[in-house]
Length: 221
Length: 103
Image (tube, rainbow over all chains, first blue to last red; front, top):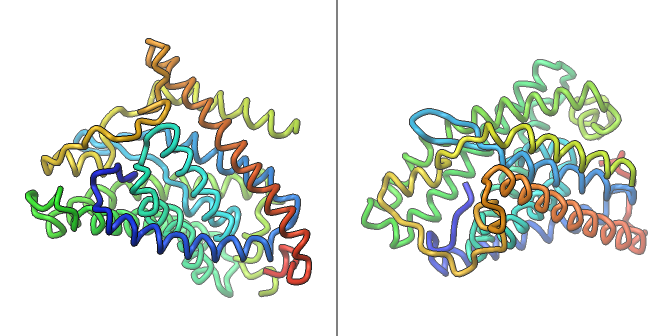
């Protein structure tokens, strides 16, 4: 879902940079206020894992592939604020060193993957309010991660669709449905991987999942 | 430190095992651009390891694996640095700092 340079107009790119900076500043403040000092290793390990996982493309149908984005995974593991920063680092390294996602389009990519992914945390939280059911947790994670990819692709489709590069092909009216078509499918992979990752972590490393205890209503608000 | 080293080793093994199975088909957005006949311009910034490959290595497996390992290290170092900055800043801004549990 990484938008390369040239697919968005400078105006779109600038607006998306602006929006993303506001969200990142908000996250930064929250992280400074709420995270423990010993947080660096978990942050580093999670980001590195998501980088590695994003390199592994799984095939879907008709000669198309997808890969884990990991926004919901990070948000549930680290909380939305640190999750957003973690994903932004992954995207930054990808753009700077691997030209995966443009530099001009960086703000748009941060919005589509890091911010939308982090915000999916609140859907998981909402769905697990007053519930300790594991089945509820699993389905909420699946839905949130699927949605994070679908909504992210919708945002990307709007951003590239209004660019003159896509005008001849039909602009937004074409870009939105085709992007959604593929990402509704890719999102199923995201959902399956995110769900199995978080459920295994919950089993193997319950100590890491402090956020989960809160999510599931065992902690106090 | 030991934990981080273990994680690096695990991630290298993860990449080493899964890279051969990675699909080289275009991803969602690339497919959309392709099917709509939109060509990606030659980017003005190609990065150092464009398309996750290290040019000095001809073998695609070695090249991708090496790029992956370098990327993992870069992300690890960058987020560790961010984590330490957070720890330092959060420590000095003690007034409104709360423990994680109260979130």
